Amino acid sequence: MRGKQARRAWAPLAVPRFRAHFAARLLSWSGGAVAPVGLAFAVLGLPGEGDGGGLGLVLACGTLPQALLLFVAGVAADRWPRVRIMVTANTVSAAAQAGAALLLWSHLARLWQLALLAAVCGAASAFFLPASSGLLADIVPAELRPAANALLRLGQTATRVGGPAVAAALVVAAGPPSVLACDALSFAGAALLLAPLTSRGAASAPRAAFGHQLRDGWAEFRSRRWLMVMTWQSALVLPVWTTGYQLLGPVYGQRALGGASAWGVVMSGFAAGLVGGSGLALWWRPRGVGVVACAGTAVIAAPQAAMALRAGTAGLVVAAVAAGAAASLSTTVWTGLLQDVIPAGRLGRVTAYTAFGQAVTVPLGYLAAAPATRVLGLRGTLGLGAVLIAVLAVLPLLVPEVRLLGGPVTASGPGGAARRPPRRPRAATAVRGSGA
Image (cartoon, rainbow, N blue to C red):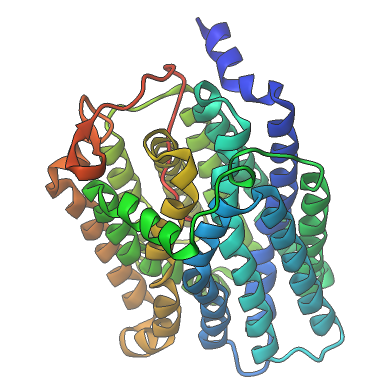
C-alpha cells in the first residue's frame, strides 16, 4: 500500500508540462526564499529607518498593487494565455529586483525608490497569482491535481528551509544587494523555463465582454457563503500575521536576538515546518477541510506569542516550526478544495476575488505597525496580535457550512444548493491560499 501511495504522490511529475512548471516555480521560489531577509535588512540599514517604519512603507507598497490589480488580473487569467502572463510577470519582477540591487550597490538607494520597485513587483505578482492557479487546472489531469498541489507546496517550502539562513549569511558577507540580485536571477530563469510551455484553457476560451466576465466571477464567488466567510477571516488575520512576523519579526530579531543571523535561523525553522506540513499533505487527506483551515490559522499565532513572551532563538524556532507546519497543511488542503469545486474557466477570477480579500487589508497592518509599537511597545503589539489571530481563527466555525466543509456535504454551488465534492484518491489533499 505504501508503494502505491508513493507512486500516486509523485505521479504528476510524469506529466511533461507539469515538470517544466514545477522546475520554473522551484527556481523562482529559491530566489523568493532569500529576498525577504535581504529587503528587510536593506531598508533597516537606511539612515533613520531602524524602527521599522520605512520597512512597513516598503512592504505596504509591495502589497497594495496586488489588491488593486487582482480583479483585472483574474479576468486576464481566464481570458488570455496564462503562460504568457506568467512569463511577463516574472520578467518584470526580475527587472525590478535587479534595479533595487543596483541602487543599493551604488549607495544611491532611497526609501521611495525601494518602495516604488516593491510596488512594481507587487503589480507583477497580482497578475502571476491567478494565472498560475488556473494553469495547474490546464496542464494536470483532475485525478492528479491534489498530488500536484502538494508537490508544488512541498517544493515551495523546501526552498524556504535553507533560504533565510543563506540570505542572512549573504547579508553578513556581501550585503543585502547580493540577496536581491539572486532573486532577480531566479525570476529571469523561471521566465526562460516557462516560455516554451503551452497550455489550454484561457487561450482557447471564448472572450466575453470584460465587465461580464468580472461580474460572472463575482457571482461564482458570492454564491458560496463558506468561501466568503473564510475570505473575511483571511482579510482580518493576514494583516496581523504579516505585520507581526514579516515586519516586527526582523525588528525583534535585531533588538533581542542579535541581528540577521538569528532571525534567519527562525525563518528557516518556519520553512522547515512548511516542509513538514507539505509532506503530511502528500499522504493525508483530512475530511474536515474547514476545521483544518481554522486550526492552522490559530497555530500561526505561535511565533508572535513567543516573541511577546521574550522567547530566545530556540523557543522562537520551535514556535515557528509549529506555525509553518500548520500553515502549509491548511493551505494545501484549501487550494485543492477550490480547484475541485470551482469551474476551471472561472478559477482565475474566483482566485482573484479571494486573493483581493486577503491582500487589501495587509498594507493597513504594515502602516499601523510603527504607531502601534510606539503606544503598546514591541512586545505589547506582538502579544495583542497573537490574541487577535487566535480569536479570529475560530470564529468561522460558528458557520455550519464552514464546520461541514470537506465532510459529507460541502460547498454550496450557485443558488446555495449543497453539493458533494468529487471523489479523490486517499493521498490527495486540497488548499488554502493564505500567503503565509
